[in-house]
Image 1 (cartoon, protein in one colour):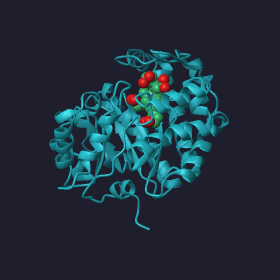
Image 2 (cartoon, protein in one colour):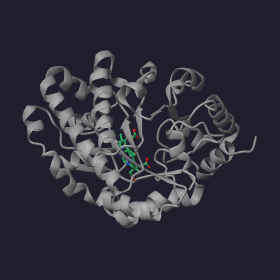
Image 3 (cartoon, rainbow, N blue to C red):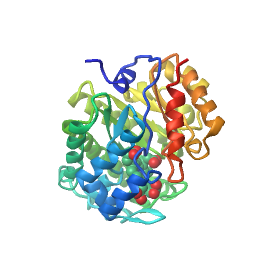
Length: 344
Ligand code: CP3
């Protein structure tokens, strides 16, 4: 059987048309997502109800024909499984109990306890691996330790990750103990997703760009390297996509240093630069600005072609540079795929 396109690109193959999927492809821009979410009651119930989580994962595939599905869950389920309180405030985003000191880190649950909370997520993966179309690859994911820690420390999303930087600078041993605990939990969580049927895993380091110099190496790059080397030892052949968002020049060499099979690029990166400096070392993913899914038109068509053509000389997975937003127009998603796959 011919291998799935996503797996071929992640193995380093240059394809005439790159495989495509979209961050947050199941989400509030789709009326069918909103209907299933209403049925679940709230976002967390949706995440923890395997039949409904699998249903929303499949919705964008039925509508658009992507080459991959991403498990429907959230990066903040891991802190919850480690004992943090987690809730979502409508229109504002996530809230968590905060970690402010050494005792707060010590009070977290042991890593082996996370499966008690997270087992419904593995069930979602099992359902999906049965129900996905044969040519669609299933991506599991987790947040990277730094990004997850920023939410656990601040108790919410923050524009500059100020509270996490302050905690790191004021109590480095406790900060590093927290990162270690999240790193261990992430290894177990991703391993369980792979055992349940995930064919690829992705590590979201959404706030990597706020780490500078040595901090970037110690708190974005090193934990990613530890997670990836452990996953590769346990599950040889499962590719990993790393997404150190807004890493700028630190995208260069990130795959080699961490063992990632592919690096996700955000929309601030120039494709021509990335083709020369990042893709020359392996597969890249990205990087259309999500705003085009709102505005559409000729600018969308031109930009899809520009990105596709810039990365046509090496392995590439087409994606947005970050998640699609709730105000996006589904017709623009269809136009994006049609343009990407046009005969040339
Ligand atoms: O990509 C996918 O479709 C898979 C599912 C997924 C979600 N969140 C679903 C979700 C993934 C991979 C995530 C990752 C995630 N979650 C990240 C890292 C990626 C990124 O976007 O930078 C972060 C930082 C979070 C934490 C989080 N979850 C925030 C800050 C929010 C609120 C912001 C918002 O968009 O409302 C969420 C909620 C969330 N996660 C939604 C979805 C579909 C919206 C919830 C709803 O239905 O109201």
